[in-house]
Image 1 (cartoon, rainbow, N blue to C red):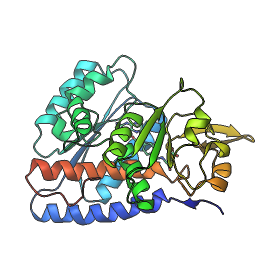
Image 2 (image 1 turned 90 degrees about the horizontal axis):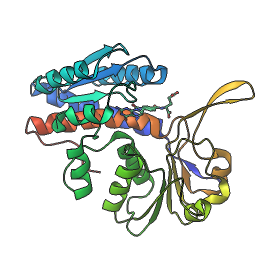
Image 3 (image 1 turned 60 degrees about the vertical axis):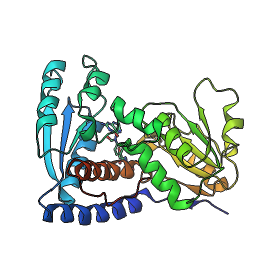
Image 4 (image 1 turned 120 degrees about the vertical axis):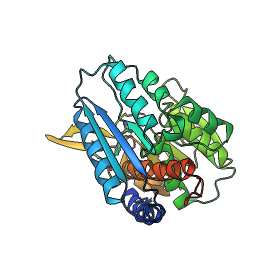
Length: 294
Ligand SMILES: Nc1nc2c(c(=O)[nH]1)N[C@@H](CN(C=O)c1ccc(C(=O)N[C@@H](CCC(=O)O)C(=O)O)cc1)CN2
């Protein structure tokens, strides 16, 4: 029997519909959420993601503030902009698109954002709060992964979860989120011994390494939930193609449920950014959040 497909595009559309209602409600109370998006440079993929973030935020009824800066922007000019956005009363969320040009220290920039407006959840205060199990703004991609996993299996207590990839943006925060759900976690990486064996132990397997097709069908436990975070642009048969970290065709024969690439985790990343902005707006204005914590 083939795996069932976890449709991230449909889940994101559902979340966007809920966001529209939440934003309308906040607007009626005179508290329209505002999102500031900052892009430095001309990375083509980043430009597409930023354009989508702005379009979706406007569609949902947000106030949208867009700052497109040249690659030559100095770190101190970027920090000055962040200070202005921190102080702006109509800005509830600030997002600086990554990657930044090499001459800018992304860690410094992230730490300069007011943690209450850090809708990417990358600020050390939010990272620390998440690991303490305290209320936090949660990074968008892992939050999207969790919502997709829970759409398939609500009770994860006792499940064995393997995450391949230890990045600050995905692997580490997702470890915390799965731990909250009482999973037993293995955070695997390039130095892990016998990665196929480790992966085969997973009831929930998340691939977030950026290596096309790394996870093969025989690395997957029959019936497992497989979440593919990879977005890899490759050339196949003379054509550009977008593929994940999982060998999709092989995985489909073995897994119980599986996200595709494209159309899996990616669309949820942007929907969760808007969800975080509503969450930040509610907290800043002392209004109850419409969303249950994940
Ligand atoms: N400040 C941030 N920078 C980056 C983040 C982030 O969460 N915050 N994540 C990624 C890029 N990203 C959002 O910014 C992102 C990546 C992919 C998608 C998406 O919808 N992917 C589609 C495929 C789209 C395509 O053709 O490229 C899919 O998977 O279906 C959305 C957002 C790094 N930077």
